[in-house]
Length: 564
View (cartoon, rainbow, N blue to C red):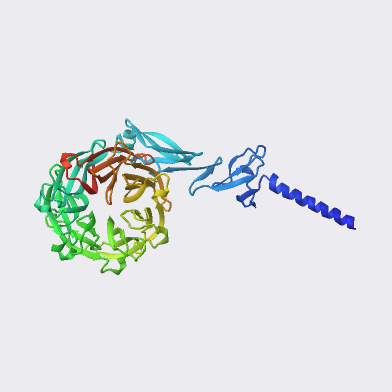
């Protein structure tokens, strides 16, 4: 009996050992889902492993996961592909078309990664033939399109569309002459040739008594005269928000006729101290024009002011809302940037502060459906854990259901906020811009502009001795991704040194950035047709005698044109 028990025990032990050895070393379907912990996960499908040849390589487990199989057919590690990517032939592959498909009238980039190699292809023209790039699954494919036959348009700038360009660029600046009494200026630049922009006109408050209050201009917008205007022989106006003569107490709206860009002419101004309806328009920081109304955000006044500009010769303040009086926007301590979209005004700035804590940022939303009664309806601050690094809030841009805010205080971040419900905005994502290797030179972001699936952010470079422009892919708002950058070290834009809030404008294939340095003010132009590799192409400075007062630029606005 003793011998029989030992034989049975020995047999069981041998079977157990063989089983362990088989599972551990010879089982081609064992998988290790927790690499380094010695745990065996579920078996891999037999279809992913060539039974007759266990060559060490990567295999696809399914459409979302790949595994590395060693020479014993045992998986040594398993990796999930990024969201939206597909596992094919052992690789995580992706392809994204920035214009969403075969859009012949939009120039766009197809980019992604195929079998470990990144790619980027841009729609282009050869005569009237368009090379249109699209995605076929995860592979980039191109088609040759005869633009005239298909659309009736010629091929221009990578699209079957009439050629588009820039008419003029408008820049407001502060100049400090030897008298040490600051005065503001509006400079106009012809950028029809991006590699050789040319100053063509300017006006200052000292030269034109109709805009004498334009001491420290902070923001400019340009547009056509509203319908029914009393002006007969003009069509284009510039609206400038400025700090006034007593900058601690005043705010000014100046209106300049720029129909003749070589000879701009001030036509009117409105000062807050002379209009009780906008008395809190103190130290304006940003202006936006929509229809017959100008909206001005003011830092010291903690307010949004509304001005009727239907008669540009007599602008009239009609309403204001302030964090002093509206509890729904109590966090709007110091507005820095304003964006108008539909019936809402979005204001980024500094939130109410707590002693001893870092500077908090805020986004405030105001209902302007009735311009005579603007009403604060929603706000969110950096206390939201999803946007905890939105500290300072320098600039805001709204695209679709999302607001994008950049901050250059301690946070140095891009924050994404869902504003689909304006009364309850909530943070959904943030990106520390310096943490991304593709945009690591962008240290202090100050200004943002959204165009298509890309966010363009200007600011100070890592060395603090110059400027930088970073480009982020925001096709997935929950995961903004840095993809390209350019700095002042580009030999074509050496004057790109110190961009501030409201200093960036994007149109077509170019980004326009204003900045200042020790020897004057600059407008730098950057080709962004390939967002992965932006390239400086030209600049103009206050050394141009026609824009000699563009010393410290604070805001830029670009007016497009059709050149048919």
